[in-house]
Image (cartoon, rainbow, N blue to C red; front, side, top):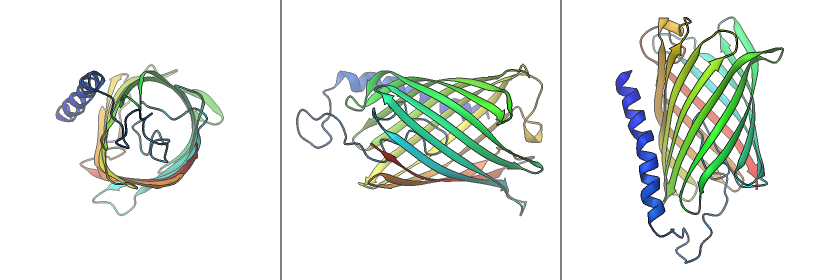
Length: 267
């Protein structure tokens, strides 16, 4: 676990360093022509999250998007995986601001419920024209539609995108309203545009309990996942698959997680 946190932490520290170097260089023109205003909007640029990690760029002003996602996870030794999923919508009413709303269903044995969340992301500095950005995000996660108690999260997001390479890093801290518990997360995502409609990379997350007595499945104070990610897009539509080894929701040992997301955006 410590090794996973160090690897993700090194990546997150490397993002701002790459940003500083990029800012000192002449701005790239993706089309190869001087005076470019940055990459043309696409389903890839106007989709801020396909799994868990968020892009610090957000989306262009006036963009409206939606996606449905399904998640499956389980233990390698078990033949009864858990299923979940939900719906995410996002909108940018003005430049630099992106708003999100999620409704997620999780299937954890006898515990099945829909839980909503709402987020606001503000891009503080940078944009796609210069190829890097830093943002702040705040999220409220309810325990259920009929339960106002829940968790609030705050995050710092960093992203770098230049010459087909895309890097995202998130540092998140969350605290429950009633339980007196808190946790921290490190998320990292990397991808490369191998074709004009195909991006291949990977995503990972490490989560650690910071305070409180509650434990995660298996008696752990931490969990993590990492795996390859494939993103395909055409016009306003996209689809993404992320899968790999995971300890999320696993009672013991190592399990697996797979997440499929399909959606689109109007921009």
